[in-house]
Length: 82
Image (tube, rainbow, N blue to C red):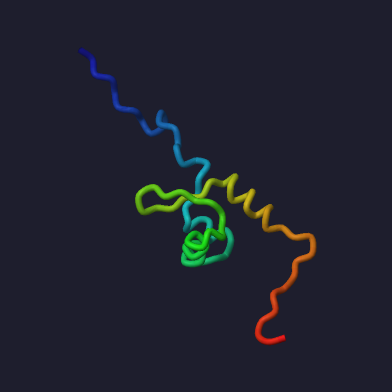
């Protein structure tokens, strides 16, 4: 009986092709991974998913989140007392 050969890496689809890691997103946005962690806890940042201990963001969801942050006339938050 002939056993089929194991799949070569070329035969296996890249399951994470549309996803980026927290580290990759932090670099792309010039943020720290800690900031993204805080945003996740506060449900402020882009939606993410966990696979084991790793956190991933769907590229399209990040782009949608960035578009949602767009403002016609950005208002700077004042610091301190008025």
